[in-house]
Image 1: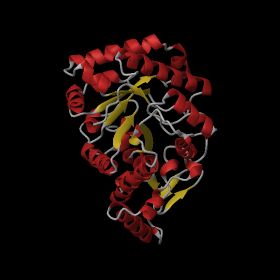
Image 2 (image 1 turned 30 degrees about the vertical axis):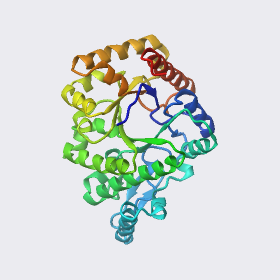
Image 3 (image 1 turned 90 degrees about the horizontal axis):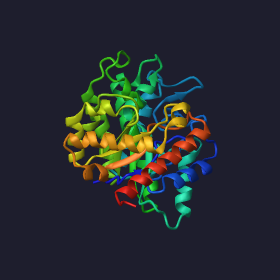
Image 4 (image 1 turned 180 degrees about the horizontal axis):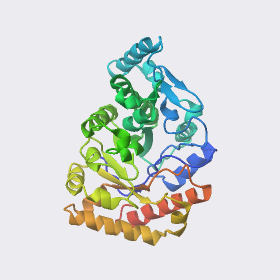
Amino acid sequence: MFNGDLRATTIGSLPLTDPEEATALIFKYAPLLPSWVQLPKFPGEGMIEQYNEGLPEIYETAERSYFDTEHAEFEPAVLRFYEDYLAVTEGGSPASLERFAISRNRARGFFSFIDLLAKKKHLPATIVKGQVTGPFTLSTGLKDQHGKYAYYNTQLRDIIVKHVGLKALWQIKKLQQFGVSVLMFLDEPSLCGFGSSAYLGVQAEDITKDLNEVVSLIHNATAWAGVHCCENTDWAILLKSDIDVLNFDAYGFFDRVLLFKQELVGFLNRGGTIAWGLVPTHSEEVIERVTLKNLLDLWNEEVQQLSSAGVAREKIIRQSLITPSCGMGSLSEESALKVLQMLSDVSQRLREEYALS
């Protein structure tokens, strides 16, 4: 069972271009559960591009990434993909797992992170966080040569689900070598479009099935699985899945999540952890005016509402993390630093209040 104990962690991105500087900031402001940093100012570090490597017959241009299912090499490439997948999942092949590696030029923050882990003798963290774009977001972010979402092609969707799982597994294996436990987040911002005309025909059961397939791979690697979804979605999809941690925008959308009271209580009662996206990243103006007192008052108010729904306050405290509401890659450096400072302050104050420090 994963216990958050009100630790601070981050969602992923920062608006910097120096990976060492970005990594040092994470270890400074979220030392108990640090996360490697995505740097979207670099080409190749966007949510879709960062995880394309290793997909069969994927083509990348300045405008888009797409599959060419009509290319003569597509079927042979698919066969090789599944052979590598089975070599990893059934044979435990380290060589085949390297097919699903993330290159340094697509994840500078990851390599800076593991370099720092290798140098640190006395790490305050016993858990570290990784992240990968989730199967729904990746399969609706990629299209075929005709412009059709990969999600609607059964074969492509299956490939992407397995690909995401092994991208997560590759990270987990790299991180575990430093003697730490791993919390792996699946970033699923596209779930906010579920139920809209943009995704006609998408079934909740299919999203859950795909998600659980990835989560199973993560669990089999003795790691924990979380999902980050900003804005709003059908929260029952995630709360009824096999994930260990649910991360949502608690600053702006807690009332929407609380509409799924029964599922939320059930999630906590089975040992699930809430990662409260309490520190806003919505705009420079919101970040400028928010105060530590605002956020502490908001958290206490939301915890009281959840407690009134039938969950003991002590359970909520043990099964909570504190995060920004979303990534910080689109913010100014000044605003991102304020978010990090606020994140650290909120977590520290709450941990002191509940004698967790």
